[in-house]
Length: 235
Image (tube, rainbow, N blue to C red; front, side, top):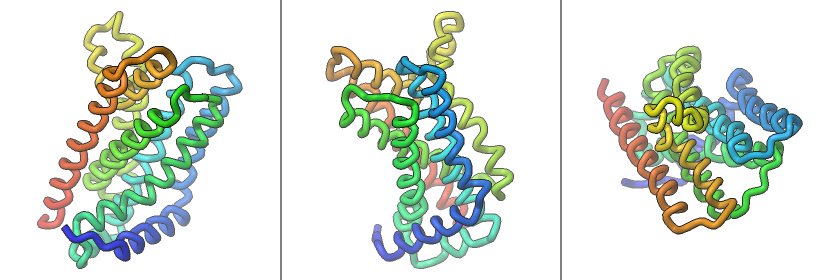
């Protein structure tokens, strides 16, 4: 697979311009930041409270923005042209993801600061957050490839927001509803479990299991996204 940095940069700049012009999408970045600020004011002092706005940042910002940018391409009939251009699969997927990754890093960093969270091990947590961003971008790509317009994207992405943002809340209710124990394996729950482990004495398994789980989710999601993308090329 040939990767062209020039094409990737062109796609990145195109996404930036579309994002800056579409206020309905760009203003969504502010929602989790406002929530993080309010949580701080309400006295957030537990890891689960810290991570609610952080996980919502991934769902609302990362997944929704990625989904909307791709859906807008389809709505304007420019995605098909991009697919048939000399740009390779890698050029398009990396280019369409790079801008959202940058926005995610900035948004998550600001959410952590606004909510008042001070990680015990910033390096390990930063790696887990980056892996999570890769996963949520894949989810946004999948949703965007199914959506036909920005309005439809807003609806398609809602189940993702609910399931993955509130995974840790479902985990907290698992003692009363055993079936909710499945929520433990969601990336959002694994991220929370990793953060909780880092606050005390942790073993290598406490780090590796969440990391590997998030990586597996990411790989499966990107494989699925690539399959759908190739199918859209011949539809």
